Image (cartoon, rainbow, N blue to C red; front, top):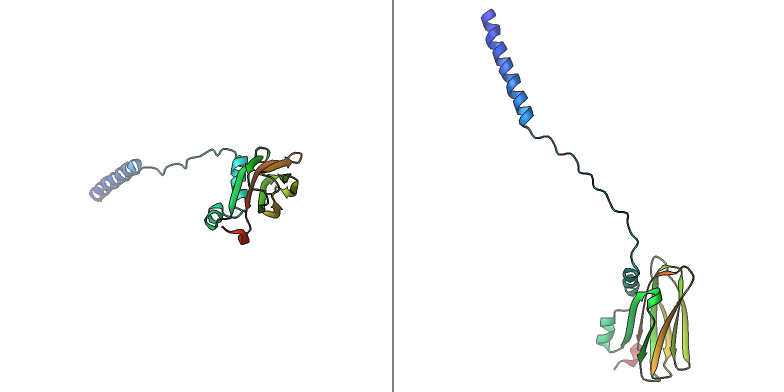
Length: 164
């Protein structure tokens, strides 16, 4: 019996040695990497202006239809503009704001003036109003409320009935 235990013991020792070696040679599962996420930054005013512009009519489609006049996008406090235009031109103005607070957009052409108050919320809602130019230029002025930040987009187009 002593002779039978010795080969069995040797076989057991060899088995333990081999499995121990195999266990050492088997790569351990990689530890999950920990990534630090940067604190999320709110979108910038220009990004918000691009979101606001998406709520308006497509300028390219309006240009193809011959009704596009002008458009502007940017930070609420940086979107004032002035353009030349023929007097007596009927226009449809579309405007949208995204962010916080409110903006009053004033469109002036000679004695013709139109004002629209826009709420700068998380989702843009386009406001549309009409204006007929009375001078050879048109001016857009954005007056922001206290603590207003965000992006503003507006465009002026001829009514569909005025296609060229």
